[in-house]
Image (tube, rainbow, N blue to C red; front, side):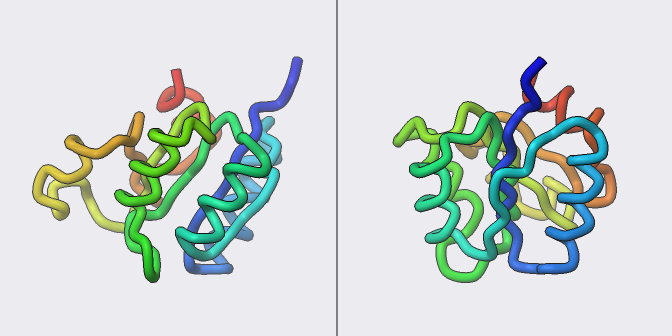
Length: 118
């Protein structure tokens, strides 16, 4: 069985490294991890991941704009927003976004990601 491919987008290198190790140990193939929205758009176009895991609070283009672009360009099969904050903190923007799902960073796991992309 093919391992689902993941593009990880977060401006904190430590979080990306920990999340990559955890997701790869749980059966995902993290094909790239990038620190900003522009790099995410470029990587998604090049790699066409099964899922883009996108932090909302990115420098430059925020996660909502990245999700909107990936959805309109069709360069990621699924887009999952992540944040250290709760969805309610964004005043309805998470629910109205182009993302398929939201996972709080503290709850991120391979199991939660599989549930989110179903």
